[in-house]
Length: 389
Image 1 (cartoon, one colour):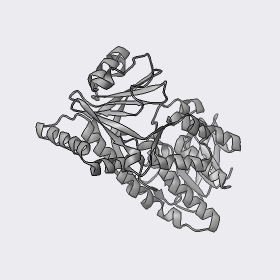
Image 2 (tube, helix red, strand yellow):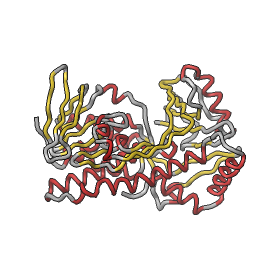
Image 3 (cartoon, one colour):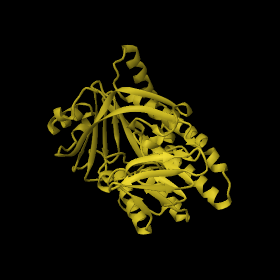
Image 4 (cartoon, helix red, strand yellow):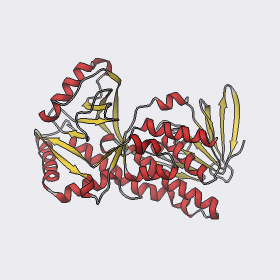
């Protein structure tokens, strides 16, 4: 088999790249080790930057998003018994975010790819990347016990943090930067109305909490927990009781409890691998970087990677220039590190660490400054809605 671009991974980054390329007449094949149902079953992010919505518009997959997505003009930070609204739209000249789950984005992209008749291989075993340091890369994989080879011009590694793409890079060619946080998020999804019409981030003496949603009838809540906690020890009743204790009274009284659809604990980490290009292999999304979910940047960073990569590939196939592809890693990393900084900052000021009284005072001073300074709120808003591509 042969294609122009082999895409490893059928998550949102791989599917978005495939859709953008296909609409420009660039042939591509997606290879995914999991089943479509497994990919769609992953519960992930749900806050989309304006830039990502615009990119999905470019991909032609936003009919349902614009019909069902919730456009948010702001969010609140709660601390010290009160809460303070960040007016995203007013502080950024009209920019907003849209609440629309990653599962929904993935489903829309899958359906669009199917409608185009583009080739995807699911449940592929023993995926291996070959010869990407030359001009004739090759991807080998097995389907139902039969070995296949896919020749291509370029490989896009969109297969996540644990995928084969980054692992295929020689150790001496890549540098990894990481910070692991000493806590995780216990998340619960339930078909109940959200406590507020916008997100509420809470810093409390008992730890961080977040009131989010997927729709006006489906809520997503989180509480900070230690890494030695086990999800089976948290009944729904215990979760909602703890959530309310971390929220200001005016929000806590609006929390509607209900049976969980999904409940899990996710550890928090910051991670960047650089560079993101190795010959004709390009890393994108979680294959190259992870952010703590506090700043809602993970899915959005994957989208910005795809923006740079798709434009570079279009330039190559349009006029034969490698300029965009040569600049891909540096352009993507410049935006990634700014988002890493923002997510680290949000995590630092909102979570309870095993810290000293001095550290707690500094954290409170940070929050008081945001609450009292329009300049600080504007900087927060600018980063939250997403820095320009």
